Image 1: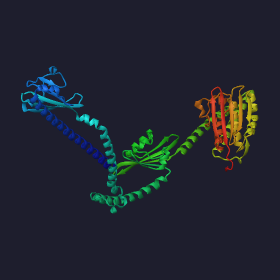
Image 2: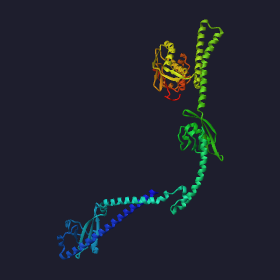
Image 3: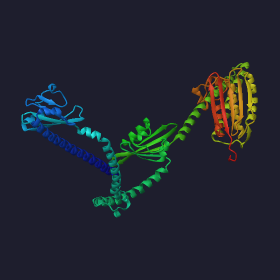
Image 4: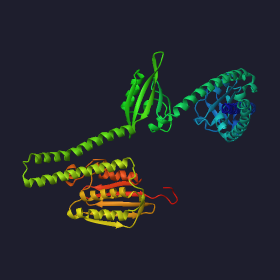
Length: 557
């Protein structure tokens, strides 16, 4: 409002100034023009008297500064002209001032040049012998006068604008001050213009009403907030148009949002499961669906909200069932994998035992059958032992107290244990690095190093090599096992740490792998809060790296 008043006063002042300047210049211009006509009339009277006394030849001897003298016969022929050759001039009978002089005794006319910068004023007077004496003079046009006056006018206009702005600012602030100082919390004490008194009174009544309503609404809202914000479940309330009316922090956290979005609830999740559940809920159905979201699993429950039998919205409850889903999936996978892994050796043992039971087996075959039964039984024992180790790691049972373990010595012991198997496959084993100790469970660490080195030998090529490197990096200890084996394709690298997962199942069975070695390494790394990484390329080998973190000095274990 203050700006509007300020602009209005400024524009009004400038407009009045421009109009005033224009009118003043127009009046002055007209005054000067009348003055010139009167001067021409006086001079023409003197010349007419001289012509009557001495004849027209006297014009040859006369000269008036700034004036052009022309003598025209009654038929329009130019008899004399002070600025041009009379014989070469055109007939002037049609000129306005000549016609008026012939008809009324005198005449006045004005003609503007083509450039509009100058106009000529003509005064003609009929003499006693019927000839017409005409005097003319040039005068600047009003447009040229305005252009020539533009610099001082602009200076005056600029000064006027500055003064108008200053005065307008003062006046606008003075007008608006009572409104700006209006205390909305104490409208009954407000001092305003009489014209605004009814409005202020009405506002005061509405303010009191709104305060009462806001207080009641604030109390209900606070109760609702305390209930919803302390829920672990996500809660969403929508209207019949799917617009999101309310949500709690748990729902935003589950759906990866930091603040409540505006508009439709479908913007939170665009999956088909979520969309169909919302549509069915607004159609009046009770819906319970499992909704996958990124790496989580949520159970979505939609209940329609009714008023007078009409669905006016819906309430959505989201439960995080990721852990339950994962446990169920792991249980099913583990049961299926264990059953499959146990079935093969048991079938083999049962078959050979059945043949031996019948007594139809030759004596020389009994040894072969017994060897096969023994090998399959050993596979079962190894598999069961690996399952027990994984179970202990999953439950985070401590087989013994933590102690200081030198990974370099532990790696050396492991390589010595595996040396016969490496010699059989003509694979060279080497250890690099220096002593590097960490706090950990020696049995678990031994299983981790053994499985890594065992895999490096099993999946290596003949006459290949295995290099174990142990480095002390201060706050970290890094153990890396590198082989020159068959390598792992990128498609399998993310899954090799899963239980019972094998890249080449036929090769794994030939070398006696259970598919649990790297799973034990992964669980052991998690047990010791170590970082586990794998780098591999087909035909070039694989490197598995473990990084153990030492606590900072003075930090609690």
